[in-house]
Image 1 (cartoon, rainbow, N blue to C red):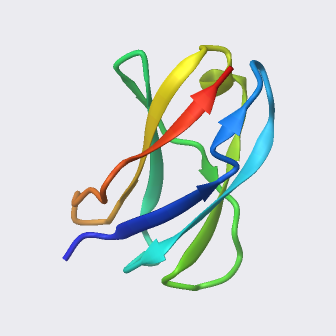
Image 2: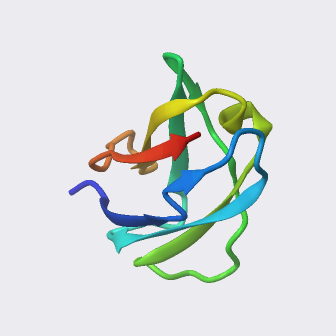
Length: 92
């Protein structure tokens, strides 16, 4: 069963921000990755959490994502290629 994404924080940021995004949900496996789709292209920010929690992880977000205003879907992809539901990251 794929990961479930319940919340991302922050979910609204300013143009060109760099920040750490906290993702919470369930069924995050050790090898899952964060994927943000920006203008049709998948960007995979670096996962930086050091815990092995299946309910929380962190990712480093930079200008590759925040240089484009709008709503960008965020998902968690597991090692088998299964995608979680998407939550929007708004860049303003």
